[in-house]
Length: 170
Image (cartoon, rainbow, N blue to C red; front, side, top):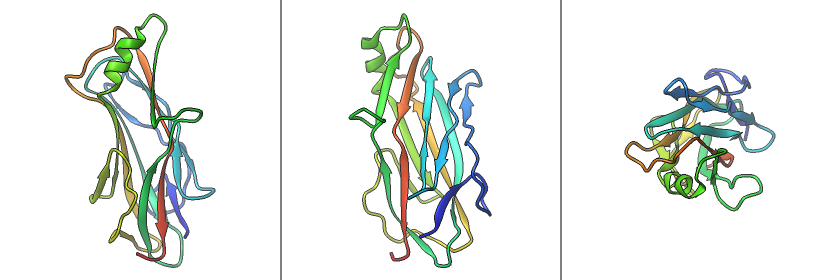
């Protein structure tokens, strides 16, 4: 299958994905696309300071192949060197205990086009096709939920790689 992540909807173009952050003062890393195997985005991370903050990464799954493609699964991998898909780390002078409590209300959501949305990954997907030479929007949102517990300072949240697996058969 020749489905890749792209920074453009109608062609294969790979650049880092700059997130849209709310508020503008939120610090988040650029997403990095890797199309060497199944399309994967990595380096998803934000330094949250208070509830209601978000970092939104928008890019495209582009079918550069000769056949229609079918989305089979969305995989959330563990953070490199860790045994969890999300790791929260207190900044200097911030209580790790308060950070871990706040971390419970921080999520990652993946939305593919207008159909599929998941915050845990999906192991088996049927009926979702991507026509050849077409793209579909993929939106990943990192969110510190409104009304969540607060930490006593800044903290970083890192998420593992996210991969979309496509096949030529549904």
